[in-house]
Structure formats: C-alpha cells, structure tokens
Length: 481
Image (cartoon, rainbow, N blue to C red; front, side, top):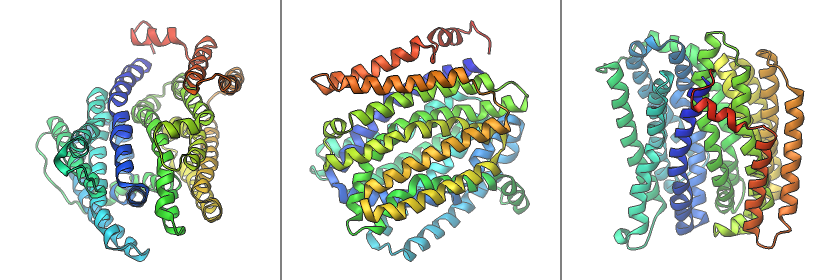
C-alpha cells in the first residue's frame, strides 16, 4: 500500500505541478487583473455561493461510493445506472434551490446570468467526480490521475486563445471565463464517462425509487458532512459580498490571497483522493493502519509547515511579485490564510481516515461546531475589519477542526501517539520559524525566501521526519508494505 500510494502520488504531483500553477497564475490571475477586483469579486462570491449548495448535487454519493467500491468492486456494474439516474434528479433539485435562494437574498439579473452557468458547471464537476470515484475505488489511480488534470488542461487551451490572441480585440469579460469552464467541464465529463463505460458496458438509465431511498439512507451522513464543511470553507466571500457596501471589492481582495491557499491545498486534495480508497481497503482487511497514517501525515504536514511559515515571512513581497492591487491588505489576508494551511493538511489526512472508517457521526458533530464558529466569527469580524476578519475566522476554524479530527481519530482508531515524533515536530516548527527570522537579514528577499525553504527542507531530511532512503526503497519495491 505504501508503494502504491507513493508511486501514484508522484504521478499526481507531476501532472498537477505541470498544469495547475499555470492555470492559477497564468490564466486565473490574468483574468482577475484584466477584469478588475470588482468583476472578479462578483464571480468569486457567486462561485462560492454555488459551491455552498452543491451538496444537493451529490448528497454524499461520491464519498460513500468511493469507499463502497474500494471494498466491494463487484457492485460497480449493478449500481452505476441507478446512481446516474439519481444524479440527474438531484441536479434538477439543486438548480431550483440555488435560483430560489439567489432571488431571496437579492441577486439581480447580472448575478443570475452568471449563476446559471456556474450551476451547470457545478453539476458537470459533481458528475465527473462521481465517475472518477468508481475509477479510484477500483484502484486505477494512474487513469484517475490523468483525468484529474484534464479539465484544467482544456480550460488553459481555451482561455489562452481568449486572453493571449487578438480574437477578442484585447478585451475580456468575466462571462467568457465562465463559458470556457463550462466547455471544459462538459468535455471532461464525457471523456470520463467513456472510461467508466469501458469497464461496465452499455449504460441503461434507471429511476428506481426504492434504490434511491436505500442508497441515500447510506450516503446522507456524508452529504451532511460535506455541506457543513463547505459552509466553513466557502461562506467567507459570500458574507463579504453581502455584508459590506464595497463587498465585491473586498471579496476580490480576499480572492487574491485565497487563490494561493487554494493552489497549495491541491496537494492535500491529491493525498485525500488516493488515501480514501487505500484506508478503506486496509480497514476492511483489518490491516495495521498506523504506519500508513504516520507516513502520509509527515509527507503532507512537513511541506505544509514550510510553505505556511515562509509565506508568512514573505507575504508582502509575494503579493507585490504577483502584481496584486492593494498589496498591503492582500498581504495581511494572505499571511493569515496561509497559516491555516497546516490545519487544512491535517484535515486531509485524519478527516479522510475517519471517512474511510465510517465515523461520519463524529465528523458531522465536529463540522457543525466548526461551521458555527466560522459564521459567528465572520459576522462579528467582517463589519469591523472586512476581508481581514474573514481571514482570522478561517484560521481559527481550520485550527479547531484539525485538532478535533486528530483527537477523534486517535480515540476511535486507537492510534498510538509517538511523543518522540511530537517532540521532533515541535523542534522542526521552531527551526523553520528561526530560519525565517534569520533569512530576513539577507539583502534580497528572494534569496532569503529560497534559503528559508531549502534549510527547512534539509532539516526535515536530517532529522528523518522525511526519510529519503525509505522513500527510495518504497518506489523501488525493495521494502514491502
């Protein structure tokens, strides 16, 4: 399992490092700079709004299906026709609820036009993720890895034509950005469907009410979890846009910083996507999961600490480098959001482990508390300190939920706490902080930034928090997991 995890993780990292940074900094950032903070802020808040309610598209089906197919692969052909029928039914419900809610909270014609296409995009994303859950559930990780970057690759191609050629007469509208995403998501969903049908054979749509009810009874706890986590992860920009007179601009400033957090968080998403079916199968086969948990935790947490603290020490320089408007405020928001990244990394490990274990009730209790904490802090802080208030709310929430999930996992799965490892981690965090402090004394910030990252990484290898020799042996299959 360790070898399967690390080899497929390397493929995923290679593909995502190849594609997604260009999407984020070459396309997404260029779009924001061309249309301005206000237009992009409107798009970003509407995107977050559509994501808050997209649980209605899924109702926990994807996460439950991933775990279920990993443990019972023979159910794929039996379930897929019924589940696709259920997904189409849920899409209609989601669209109606989104539009009605948008009208109730005061969205007008311009917002509704964009929102309709974002609703369609959310359906296509959800449909593709469900199809990919079957592929990863069968442990076809290489195929899933290629599909995971297909939508972004297509969007880069389409948007590059719109942004960097004369086809638009050097003008660009935020609507075109959304239309490009729709085209890419549609093509990706059709290609992914073709891959799945190659395994299952011909598809027959079924609308079996008894199946729907029975399946949703098993998946709805996963749906509630995703809904609650979506609220405390995505409601910030919606509240900024709705609560403040200059809300669109504040949401745009928040998007500047959030974009970079979203970029580094993709590594956590990759880990979770691989770990869920691996953990699920190991738990079903009653294997010792402790070594795998520690192994994956260190691989994600160590880089998260380095990225988080280095971003905090060089926040303003990074914002200026990216040519952000209002770089001073963006830097303050960026610093706080990046400090929440280690908490997010912990969630991707222990939250995934608890999901694989079926400990959804405990996760829902944690997520409900996290949502209440996040909304409460946002409502209190946004009127006082605007986008900075949302950043503080995010940091507090991510820290709380990470600690809660760690404690729940230790208690339920009887994981052994290594006090020696805990001490080494505390020492490591202290070293990274000190390396950041001393690196600031170097004349040019870029050299200081690179020195901080390189010395921190070297310290992690020297203290064997990341064991390079063991990684090499795993990849070469000399060490049996």
